[in-house]
Image (cartoon, rainbow, N blue to C red; front, side, top):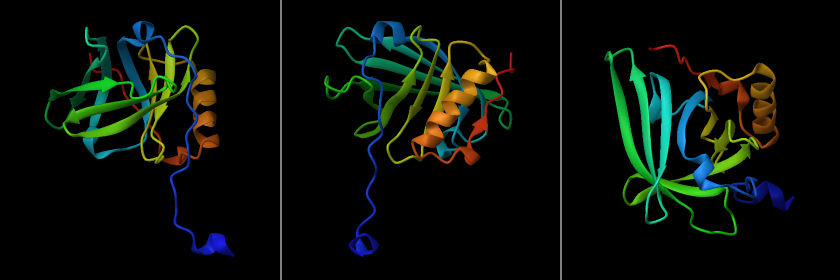
Length: 162
């Protein structure tokens, strides 16, 4: 009965145990995501990660708005707050506000990744190419579902703007 009266807590979200930041940097294409306000209406979304000399990571997100007929960009910074959890980064686009960037799944060859937030409100499927093999995509979505994400809300992203 006590559980009926307990406060709702954010469940932990398992992340990868190892990340080579040098291999992770570079261009990633957004294959799919959970809808969010800051990417609303954007397609052909990419994220470029560049390692900085201070150990932090420059983040450059770019997406095309067909409504405005132009690209929208957002520049931020990511960092690893705790070296014991290399798959749990923080990212900020508007200091002092930061968000979680949890790498839930990562291909051994760094060709695709599943990234989310412990709140389960944010989720991204990323790949080094504009398309992702259907079986890999399905596995990533199953992983997301098993970790409590609402996969029925996931939208695939058009990468054919160019």
